[in-house]
Amino acid sequence: MSELGPAEEFVAELKRWRDVRGLSQSALSQLVGYTPSYISKVEGQQQRPSREFAASADEALHAGGAIRRAYQALHAKPRPEGRRMPTPDPPASLTVEHEDTSLHYDGRVYRATQRRRLFNGGSEPITSYLIRISVDRYPGDPERSNAHYRENPLTWEEINLSASVAGEPLKWRVQHDRDAFKELWLLFENEDGRYPLYPGESAWLEYSYTVGSDKWGSWFQRAVRLPTQRLSVQLDFPAELEPAVWGTETTMTATGNPFRNPISSSTEGGRRVFSWSTDEPPLHARYRLEWKFRAKTPQEPNLTSTADTASGRMQAIGIVQEGDPILATPARLFALPDEAEDARRVVAELNSAADRAAGVHPFGKGMGIAAPQIGINRAAAIIRTPEGESITLFNPRIIEEAGGFDEQYEGCLSFFDVRGMVPRPMSIHVEHTDIDGQQHITIFERGHARLVAHEVDHLHGTLYRSKMRPGVEPIPVSEYRGTGQTWQYGKTPQ
Image (cartoon, rainbow, N blue to C red):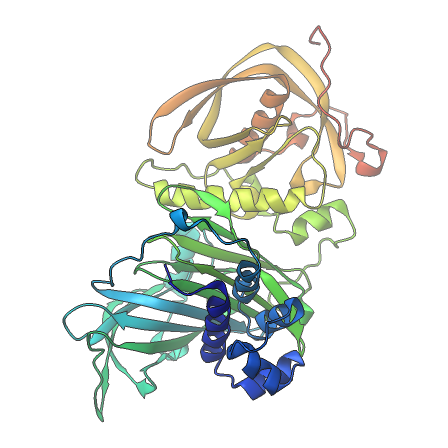
């Protein structure tokens, strides 16, 4: 922990982000509408920063909320002296003082630029650094991705890699060269000399590469492989594509949770820029940002629905719609615990999709999402009950039905413009596997049984239309009167 006070911390934060973005006080003043003298006085602690200045500087520097948080800490109540955290010992090896990553998309090509300020806390000079470049056009469906990259491998020519340390261009040596994965050592040398990072020194390492949208996929992940003090990410998209961005965090002790800090956004010169940052991310944590382009693009036409319909709103937040072959295909089972990491990632994406769905529609009866509904052909589903309970199922199958049947209206996120009257058993016994590979049998009843059975059907390639009685058709959602209400059950099943 730093020994600086809140005022010094705010100034350090502001200067750090000016350094990251390469802006002088004068250049920053033009972006935020404050005079260079004001910024100079703030950094010299002769002027107390205003809330408006902190917000403007955070947005102009794409600090992802870091400057605003420093301002809030400046006005927070001081902690009791007895709670002061001890200062840790100096690092014993390579650490990352700041990782700042940006992803720019022009409608056809993504260019990723990664800047890391490395500190050598060891006793030997560092002369190389391992980096990885990986792509996945169809996350969660490795068979489809593998087939895609076998036919369209990622090439060194299209990557167009460039790298430097402390401003000096670098050579590199390839470690692994796969169709969708490249791993190489950046060598701290070039034709003009060698540039080791000596003990006690810090330097900015920067590298960038390009990948076409036909090979990228709508996600960007940062993995914390070295002790890191600060992590920041910036996504830069054409505003005309109407991008929506969300993020999930996975650590060694938790599956997928939403980012703890909000993602900031701003529009500048026809570009929509999303910024996010966090301090002291835990080792081995993974931060995954995902996005959806809500407008039509030449590469991904959106001709089947519009956002002014219930189904269109679901499609706009990433829910696969009826007619896509993945909804009629049995989902591929997980081999657990060997595929535990993949399973956790899929659940994180399901929870993220559920949060987005809950933001555009009230679910009084609870809700569920199966992996095929977000384009992932794996046997995983989540259910959120009306009581607030969260149920996660891997490889589920119904092995017994009991208690008779009742018939109630159901809705499906994949064709949300209608509601259908569906007979379901009052009680089901479901065999499923946990993340550790242990098999379980769980009994679900009434409304919970209906929610679970609906999602199990999805994982077997079945939609509720096929479960309706002959001659019965779904009704338009405009005629349905049960939105926001809980399930209703009589005393005697029909």
